Image (cartoon, rainbow, N blue to C red):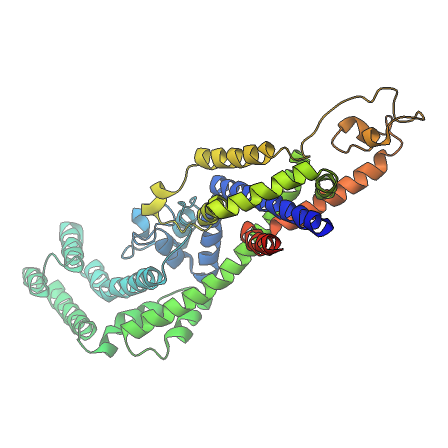
Length: 423
């Protein structure tokens, strides 16, 4: 009988910790959604990796990434000043919590290679600026931009240059021939030549730390595919570190939320455990409810749902699939109602003790009721300090318990409940 009572108390407490842990997870998810914490954390991690302000701004607003709102100034092929790049990067992030490694490498390769392509045509622009002016200069610049956009060919641009006055025609034709040779080398089919735009782009990165990082990382790459694989490995490694940091932050948040929740619900673990021990009917009912929740799978389903919402990896296209804050608040309210329906010794009350607790003959159990706020006031109860100390200790136990996470308590409840059933 004694062993049975102990097992029932343990099952009841684990069940309570499971429900409270689910509630903490739901509240954590609601808080992180409201504050967009995961996207901000990801953005900070990207800024630590890509320290060049121009590449950073272009990466975060890249159509494949969309960590921040897109900005035409930050398209891969556009020239962007460091000041303008900072303004782009400061935009509030979209609710993007995860970037696939292949998209990271593809976007970064696109940006760095586009910089090389822009520099490829820079001698042409410079030659036009030196050789022409007025309408001829504007027309020549437009033709070069069309060449960059692949709407005209080199031969068509050469034919246009042949219509210009002799001095400009000769200079521009010679410059165009150098561009043609460089473009031909870039367009070669062999793998090493395909690396030329990438390596050239790295050479033009202005921020020395990021340039050195890419140069070191890709120094041994022999193909674009190998370069992409190295970038993906670098990204995955840094994201694992970022994920560990985020999990630690969430653990701290769980401790804070757990303590505040214990206080708000007056979920004092010491008082609850003692009440379950003293009240066989409540103890047996709670243990039976815990076993039924396990058998029906309802508790496991609640835990899985809460964990999936917490760990949801969101891209801009998946945003509509994420539960709204109203839905999350409703789920948290349902969990609170489930806790209250168990008739647990939690919650607060305010009832004056007739005659006061300083007089002899007053029922000690009444004055020792930690749920009664009246008993916690110094002028009402000589034992108020002891009650508060025990209550804080009970809150701390609850706080540490719920921070372990619902899956931990669910697994433990499974083991204990099965063991208790066999006994």
